[in-house]
Length: 567
Image 1 (cartoon, rainbow, N blue to C red):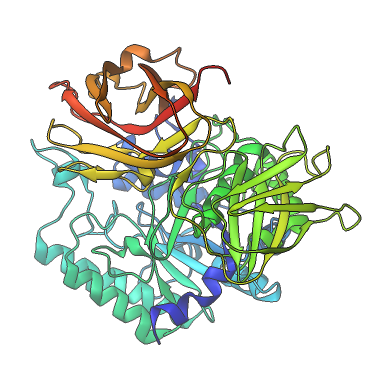
Image 2: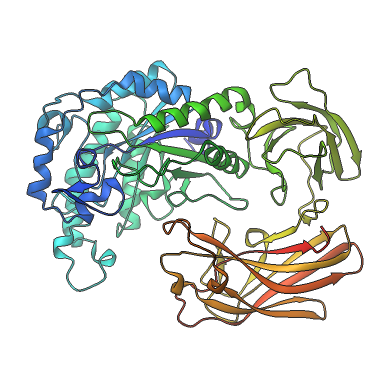
């Protein structure tokens, strides 16, 4: 069976539930009365809790309120098509009945039941794919597992996570592989094994795990975090959302608040608007969205998580046609008003900013539009006006949805779209790093920000089509982390268009007030002004004149924006 054959259901699904649940839930972010900073499931490592003391948690772990039917039903109501749960996280505790590993929920806790079996049964009733997360390298409990901090020594902690090769191989053979056999033979068809944090695993070892999974269940997917790009699909970083087109099959794992495993002090819940924004953005890039909940030690999914997921599900009930089974947007860039997905000869316009003038515009579409309708509003008409590659849709004055509305557009064939940045009316022209042409050693990360831009030999250029001549402000958009602004620094850049050039300093000096020190901050730096006397195609480039030598992350460019002065 090929990877594409395995991926067929996964591409159709687009949206899944992630569940982080283990002994760490009983600590809820505290150890011996003190708050331990960091994400909930890493408390054993972050709190440097000795193995013998951590093992004692199992004696009191009794999730009497766990209800597999309720969990699976919540996933169904949320519109999620697959469910991935931590069968074993880095703490090394098996949340299933493992004959090969007595350190498990059935043998070590008063609960004495196998929640994975109950959940598999509940998911199967609802047509939800049951999937398992399994930490294949980091294991803070088992001998030979990576990440035992007691023996870190003097080197950088992360680089010292690897065990001696012979010990780690023994761990793979005696702990990991027997566990995988159990998970793939006792619980029925499994959609995927979500491996994580390969650390120092070798390519040969990653391949052996992948091959084992496929030998036991040929249709079971293997996530990219098995290591060395040998999985069936790729996994973006935690809470990482793509800014531009992503080649191949990818998934984004994301949280509802700031943690994965339960922390009683984390109330930083994302809004429904943020969740829908991330859902439609992932879908528009052809990326699956795996959204996490962290149940309590009693087995209860926090009520804010329940409420938010049901609201997402209600939106999907009305608009899921624009998400399920769709592929990435055929347009070169995202439109200013929202995002686009595609299914055959249909486009789905997911409108976050409903047009005040009642006109929704598409630029660069060479197809003839044969129909247009508002999803969920059969009685509302949409008039189509088309002039060359510009399509104008006359829509009702009021948006049908409060946050994201959907307009379905039928074409005369598969989408044929010009691959060029095209000015959208009077909106600023956004030349994102994701669609720029990069030269030199710097690269553009899938999140749409440059990385490794630490030398003046790198540069970036964009070709675009200007529709409205005039004077434009040039703004450089960069990203910094407020926790370590010195890592990002200030840099001198030169923006060139033909014989005109502008030089300015961009970076942390333009950083505003810090709203949340845990999240990256976007910084806008004015570069200068350029005058465009005529419409048509044009090219702009940006080069580094001087890079802050102390800024270890270098220049993190997100975009160049051209803002019309009289707009």
